[in-house]
Image (cartoon, rainbow, N blue to C red):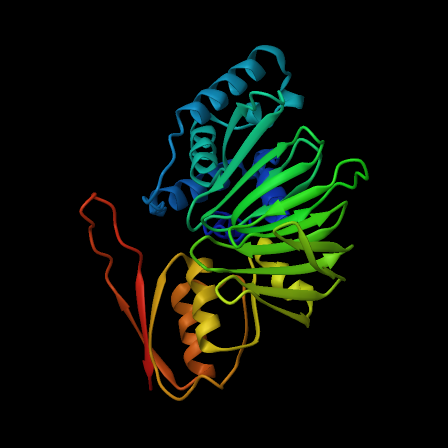
Length: 339
């Protein structure tokens, strides 16, 4: 067995799948691969440039990691702990990687109900897995925030600002409700679906992969969805559009893949912005009707832009990042022009 660097590259690029995570764990389990794995991780870590915007206070995360590792050292045998199979250098690198890519979790108590509120934050440019106390799992997208709690009436409530994929645990006695910044609520019992609703977007996109969901606006039912249906709600004019789609195209982001299937240049740039954590400025004319069909998985930003110029008569210009007044760097800006 030999190391395939693309698995490690995809983890640092935040485009990894569960298969990539399992491969990395396997590399550490194979004693013959330990040294090569450490060298590759060390190289990646030295070249890693984390996003400096809106960084959370991670003191509690460091404490939890320190406590967990030390507790394992005291009570767990080598066969039971992956941490104990890794050298000190590799352990430091892995902890650093976890801190850089982790979902920041804070636990608080709801005063009256006595239930736990759990908050997940996926920093800009990162996507992360989550698991809720009820067994529901999913992925939280770039620059997104999720808050989960159970109400006194035994409803499972999620307040979402951003992008998320949910695989909801079925429970007829506890409805699962996702509340969005667009004020469109999604009610389910058990299903798989994708929601994109950032507070700055003034819109909400829902794509159903399995099961069924009910949509509500201000406690009024406005529709139901079946698998492979997409609903777009625009809060500015209170309009709802429903269409039939291939749900896989919309949920592939959780596996580090961006699928663009006959979308406009404007929508393409919008999705690329979040996929690569950059900013686009369109200075094009008369190509709005041309559509983009593209699949991105292992490509870096420049590779993606070069592919885009092969599809459309455009050229791009990448501007340097500037230092902001608060000491952080601005996002990379790409200007798109007619060729």
